[in-house]
Image (cartoon, rainbow, N blue to C red):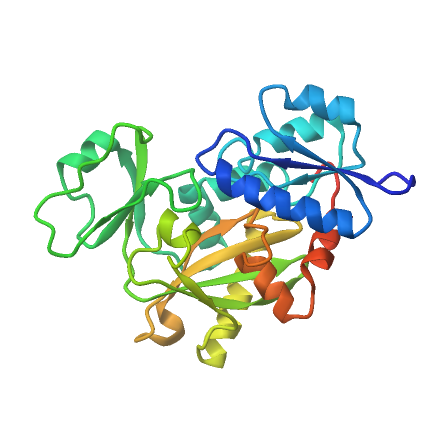
Length: 304
């Protein structure tokens, strides 16, 4: 980072993915927090001219608050590497790997971490017959925020009718009955475990609309289960090659103890509002939202 004061931080936000609005919310909150921490902050809504505008601004650091494809999958990270601008969160390879759910599961398995059965298939084939025994979940292999998810119930007579706007290849994943848990890793430490409680499926609306879900932090689970979540989250972080902050999501069948805990995915750029999951866990450790954002900026580097 440059020695000039105050350091200049460009907050990349918005973009063109399905998660644009979520990213704008994260970016605005991060920008406000970093200004309060003494940084010079420029908010940049990422578009096709993002490389040119970054060159014009000449920042000391880019805070990547983009979510979803192009911002979280290694694409913008490659631009930042090319421009030699230090940036936050994971690098090109880890970002691409974490965004690819099926390949990230292969990395989890290689690290000895528990995952549920899944496969990739053409959308047309998925709509014609059950490729796994119900219940199962159908979702894009490389989207976040539970976009484009379908749930096929145990007694479903026919597979789901998928909309035309979805990718040609989709993931079909065995559904695990149980509870939704998540754990954040900050550098070399795991912060805590949160349970996400919702009346129905934890989809986009449940995540982001008021009243769609609520968080129990720390999660009211046995101590051994908490320790397993924290351990698995750190091992997933390392297996994927993540840097900075990541958040790993789990399903837990509470009738099976630790044996019922399965990794779903790792988010390399978690939501960044004060009430988002990772900042909430940081707050429980006495880390304010501003201090959390400052740590992420100070952790920034190139060639990640």
